[in-house]
Amino acid sequence: MDDFHHKHGRLHCEDVPLDRLAEAVGTPAYVYSVRTVVEHVKRLREAFAELDPLLCYALKANGNLALLDVVRRAGAGFDVVSGGELARVLSVGAKPSTVVFAGVGKTVAEMEQALEAGILAFNVESEEEVEVLAAVAARVKRRAGVAIRVNPDVDPKTHTYISTGKKESKFGVDLERGEALARRVLALPSLELRGIQCHIGSQITTVEPYVQALEKTVALARKLRADAPALKYVDMGGGFGIWYRDAAAPEIAAYAKAMVPVLRDSGFRLILEPGRVIVGNAGVLLTRVLYRKTSGDKRFVITDAAMSDLIRPSLYGSYHRIWPVAGDPPPPLGTEPDLPLHDIVGPVCESGDFLAKDRPFPPDVKAGDLLAVMSAGAYGFVMSSQYNARPRAPEVLVSGAKFAVARRRETYADLVRGEDARPAFARLRVAKAASGAKAKPAAKAKAAAKTKAKPARKASAKPAAGGRARARGART
Ligand code: LLP
Picture 1 (cartoon, rainbow, N blue to C red):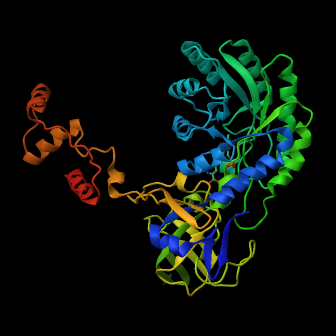
Picture 2 (cartoon, rainbow, N blue to C red):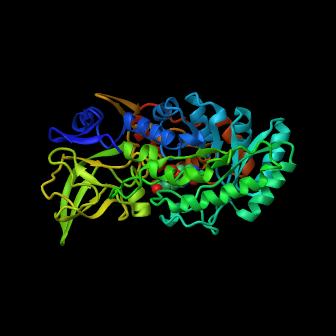
Picture 3 (cartoon, rainbow, N blue to C red):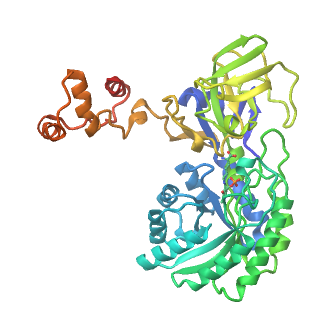
């Protein structure tokens, strides 16, 4: 479901007309519906209620702090994949006992940070990782909760970049290795085996792969149970699909209906790590038309949002519905109107910068019109960048008739924060090159640096003017 509806001739998020919101915050801008997020968490919890699920929201989909706070209040824990994500969830008051830590490449520093916090489980993905984690845990004198990520060799039938459950994927260990690895964990006193985990992919729109994967995962957990007193969880990862082009993704209840019987009476508690299904349809990217143009037979709509704001179309060839905020509602999901084809493209200097290709689109849309790029709440802002020195878009939360900026638009000062146009080593060479002086022997140069060189200028937080001055300096 979502809370974006055309009412009174314009698109609303909950009760906020999006043209009014865009006037207040500018474009491009991400907009999220709180009600949709809360409703999705509730539906997940209710659908799997029989298994007393622990929902660990995968914030890689959207890590905005205000949104994390909403998710936490709705009763979910978190699935993190980096020390940065762990810091984010702790900063909004997440209970560490509701946090799992995934990823094939956890660093020692991240392990220490998570042990210090006291998270529920590390989802470990290799033999080498287990040995390192055991050593780190022993050194810091904390017992690490562990879930083995197995790879059930199931085809989730989704885009290859986001398919993770096949044998050849870099994730997890195969089932045979999984059992051996679990036994190794049981032999290491600084580790405690708490779960068996798998995640077969993302944007999965059929139920069968989950059932197959769950059966294999539960079978392994059962096999280990007698030797593993703390083994309480079966974690099925995330991956539930959402609407993009059509309503092909099953309702959450349909996944639950197929999965619950496999776990019922097993005595294991279910963990889920949903990301996209909670936030994907809860967000849109608002963008304004800058220009229109035609080249040969090709019609272009040029918007102020680019691949730097939403990379999914360029990276995966993903389809996002795009429609004007004002005027008639869009055609129903899954139908294409009989309209001339347009490429909807951004200002970035790459031919791969597009939001849509060959899309039937109203030909009367003109410069200044506001468009909504739908289903952009997941893997939208989090994958955005400052490419082409474009400040990242703001993120706005809507609740009922109210809206508030939860992350402000970046400034030019944000673009250069942390940079130094005159790092210590370059200062000398740049000064020499400018004065035309011959290179001094190294020792003399060092001495000169000590006496003459001024401290490197730090990037200040001042807006645009400071940024321009530094940019000029960088060219010398
Ligand atoms: N758990 C693990 C271990 C994962 O790797 C992922 C996603 C999730 C949970 C959450 O999956 P979800 O419920 O959101 O499908 N950038 C891509 C998606 C990458 C997904 C990576 N892993 C996209 O834009 O489609």
